[in-house]
Length: 402
Ligand SMILES: Nc1nc2c(c(=O)[nH]1)N[C@H]1C(S)=C(S)[C@@H](COP(=O)(O)OP(=O)(O)OC[C@H]3O[C@@H](n4cnc5c(N)ncnc54)[C@H](O)[C@@H]3O)O[C@H]1N2
Ligand code: MOO
Ligand SMILES: [Mg+2]
Image (cartoon, rainbow, N blue to C red):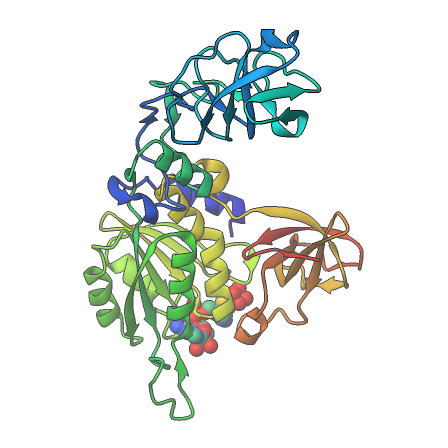
């Protein structure tokens, strides 16, 4: 059995980023830029005031008072040049009149009708945002690989880019296998269960920024699974759920072998999720996820999420989900035969990460995933960790504060 880290490396090696597509700016959040965006003008594009006050000439501080010659609002062009002894009322963001080189804030000014007296006088450049001081026209504003968070979206809007080139989100096909499975409204007949993995995996695909394609359920019949898999090969990635292990009706390894797929890896030294299979098949990447609901979702976070992120063009530091060191709020145990990932809640309180383990590590217990945002792990060979001990933790959801 190979380690989690080796498996991640082998999988990521097979993944390429998708081609670029045009995307409306309002739909571009969390997408990754596939072009260099150059600034067509300076930021700011003109000298302007950083404060509400009076545009002045910084060399006029020796005068007793100044004459106020006009009022300049944001969005207005000043009509006059400031001469010695003159000031202009100016608002934040308004263009500085020529001749002015500083702004006296109104809290330090005593204006009467057309006359301005002052306590302290501003030095050259005070409260002025100089043209080009944030960024200069013609130089790259954003480069390929930039992740478009709200700040980048606002910047692109300021640069008048109503659309951008970003990497296309990969299509991820999900096929569940199992005679016991029915669709969400199906007849359970006392011995069947709902194909919940289809829903959990679809939500994870969306969480990762890709597009799920729901292929429904195939019975435990290798011929049918094979046909359904071949039909799914137009997707970028294919997830097979169930049938990854060694049972009499577990056909994922057999079907892939018969199709001439190159199996890159099978079985990982971890719990949950040991029987993960990953293969190249018909020019596509296929994951054979274990059917147990917790194992299936956990394998996604460990081995499919990073592949989606890489294909979306994210930089390497953002392929894997983040990890932190956290303090256990209660003791944990493991069999010690594999690296054990323990589900729980991660929170940040009093400058410390805390991890509260959930009471079970049963791979079939879907109820145990409610409210879970992290998995702490114990290395193979370790069988226990005490309350207060620090463990590494994989963060899969939003962190709790307080
Ligand atoms: N003798 C051994 N038995 C098992 C081993 C082993 O090493 N030796 N490995 C165990 C481990 S670890 C896991 S994990 C599971 C993996 O099972 P499979 O990938 O073969 O999946 P299935 O047998 O099809 O199903 C297992 C379990 O999950 C339920 N299931 C399946 N699909 C879904 C779905 N789409 N939605 C919800 N639940 C699903 C299924 O009903 C079973 O209960 O194997 C162990 N066995
Ligand atoms: O590794 Mo399996 O995922 O124990 O349940
Ligand atoms: Mg099985």
